[in-house]
Image 1 (cartoon, rainbow, N blue to C red):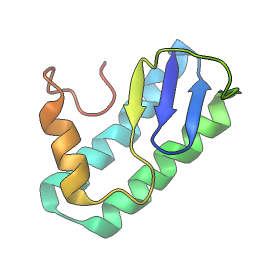
Image 2 (image 1 turned 45 degrees about the horizontal axis):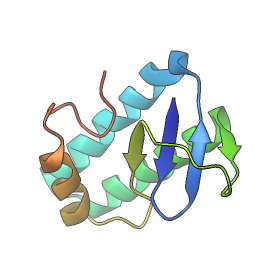
Image 3 (image 1 turned 180 degrees about the vertical axis):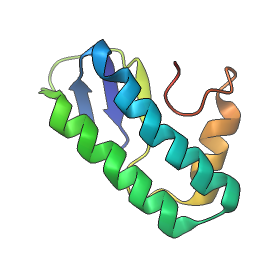
Length: 96
């Protein structure tokens, strides 16, 4: 699976790691629901770090469609709330 981190590039991560990302995604959703920017920043930092730790960076020259797009650590509650609202599946940033 190809995950794009907004403003940072793409990483190829094993599909088998989806459950790890879903756990952190639950923390992101909770932070947005409660409106906690501190909690959101911590969850997004963990999500980005996990993608980078489990993934292989894809070179900028390589044109590849992303399966998932996640915000970087600097995203606000309002920005992530909008991203979640745009997800028709209602499954958070990471479906599954």
